[in-house]
Length: 352
Ligand code: F6P
Image (cartoon, rainbow, N blue to C red; front, top):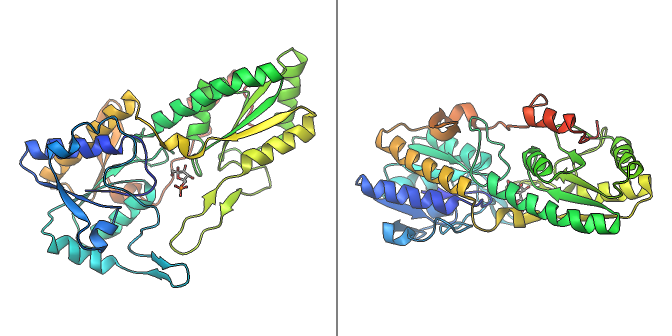
């Protein structure tokens, strides 16, 4: 079992469930360290017993470590040397270690890598993880609920200071190319504008909405901006462009929106980036339960030798999906989604 990509609250709950359910059905579980590094470098694995996972249910992070810079097919060797293909070594190491199955807990990138190894004969079961909630085939990924809860709490706190100072507070949240965190936290936190990648925004429309609030007496506003949001005719805001072995890093749009709104409205504005705080801390009870169900289901699929699959949440059930039907795609917010329409009905602007 390995954990790959950015961490998400609930990873340890999955690890615990796999170890406990595995142990109860006579399966020995080996934990691989730092994603696929555990199959590239020797001595980066350990047998996990129920004793090793006692007490980790509520812990953020992952006891196995993780990386989002460790694709064995394009492994960054050093900044000057580019990337190296270690995929053959991974397959050899898998067999040399006498492993029978590989449970991969990861997001779209890691599950895509797992799928490639599946095609090379490695029996894989995937478990979808990401705070972004953008994996196709599952209604929820664990980590998302915790990230939304944190962002909502942050917005609540910003509300009081925004109101006290008659300011506009702009909050940038994570989510990559999907607006799920922004939409859910924005609605839960009572935002006045929510900007998401699925709807390129017109800053003039957002400014109009803030001015209208001033006119009826609410002289403060909250604007939630997804890191992947961008203006109509504009482009994504990047902290770092993509290069071989490294995905692009999104960020900066919150500050840009903040500046533009100050210009357009003449109001005092401030921006806050929630960043990695959204990935830290204890998982919510929803995420603990979902992660636990995912882990137990992954063991069931291993026992049934139902490989090339990913566990998924199809309320109220946990089901299996074919990996080849879910990898390489992004689940974005549908423009006719009930929550989006609800937000619009309440007068929240998306800048469109
Ligand atoms: O995919 C999860 C996520 O937190 C995204 O929301 C964000 O864009 C990215 O990971 C940040 O990754 P890193 O850990 O490399 O900063």
